[in-house]
Structure formats: C-alpha cells, structure tokens
Image (cartoon, rainbow, N blue to C red; front, side, top):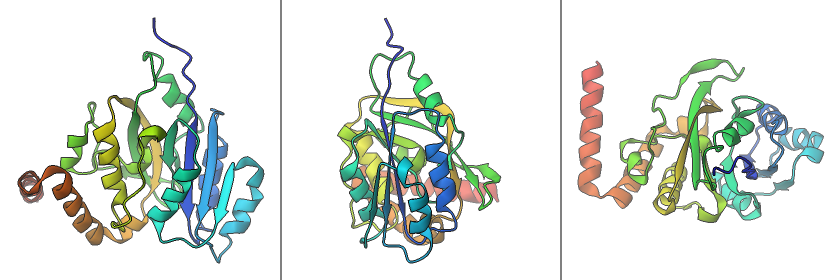
Length: 250
C-alpha cells in the first residue's frame, strides 16, 4: 500500500551579497509557500547595501541568518548546508523564486505514489527578467529519467530545481569558482538510488546570475568537471556533438 502521508522538510538556503535590488522577492517567495515544513536559511556575505535591512524586516519568518565575509558563492552555500536540518536541500539564490506559492506543496503531492522519500526531486525552470516576467523556458529540459551520466550532455536540471537529500550532500568543491554546482549535482547523483521527476515548473530563475555573467569561465570549468567524472574520450565526443549541433542550427 502506498504511503500518502510523506511530509518531508525542505531546507531552503539563499546566499547573497549586495542583493538589495532582488532579495525581497526571493524571501517573499519562500515565506509565502503554502507548505509549512520549511526551514529558511539566509547566508549573507556581509553586504554593504540595503540587503541586511530587508532581511531584518522578515527576520521572524527566517529560521537562521548569518551575515559575515565569505570566500565566495560556494563557500556561503557550504555554510548554509552545515546549518540545515531538513530532509531536502534547496539552494534558491537571491533573485530566484519558487514558481508558485504552492510549488513545494505540489512537489510533495507528486510523492503520493511512492513508499519512501526519493534521494533527489527535480523539475523544470523558467527564465525571468528583473520584473519577474517570463523570458523563456530553460534550453535544456529535465529528462524523464535522470542519472549521473545525464550531465554528459550539459546541466540537464538547473541547480535550483534539483532538491537533494541532505544525507547525500557533500560540501561544494571550492576549487571551482563558477560551476561547483555542476560537480555537486553529479556527485549527489552518483550516490542516489532514486531520482524523482516532479514534471513541474519549480523555479523562476533570474537570467542575470553570476554564472551567466561569467559564462566562458563557467564553461571551461564544466569541461574540467566532465573530464573528471566521464573521462576525456566521452567528454570530447559530447563536445564534438555540441559543435555539430550548433553548426546545423545555423
């Protein structure tokens, strides 16, 4: 008989630095969730703009707040992970938001036919502008069947729409400045037994994120990560296909 009463706790972690222009929408997206088994952790890198005053305005609705200098985005994420106590981790960066007020509730509803919590929950992402207006769906769609080998073809699931069990998660590798999330997801999937497609749009992703601004450096890091996990031959073959595909589209 299927368990219809799975009620996982989500640890939602937002890392930010001088994000006063976008942090409020992210906070409101989390505290407005109709699903209440949520802890919210904000890791601020000692912002000098209005970020901290905005966070303080919502302090009673936020589980933990840390504001101190860090060594970058992934160092801050590691701090948030160390504080988390939930079943699943969700990294929702400043400027990003849940797609709907009941997104987490909808996700949990998709678990009604499973007997135990999957190791990974994942879904789709849409790109939005600063005003929250829809720009386009993410170019890579989440596959129906996801494995660690899927990322040979790129980051098939956006990091924000990839909910990993906290028990499987290891720290981000700080050798990577722009694509440690790519490596992190692969390492989680290598350990995961069950990866559950929610078939939902989960995240509205602000198009102007750090990786977008540092696109070339991010791609170089991803290449190194792919070689590490998949080997030179597989990585070169996949990239040959990427070049051919781009040429055919012209």
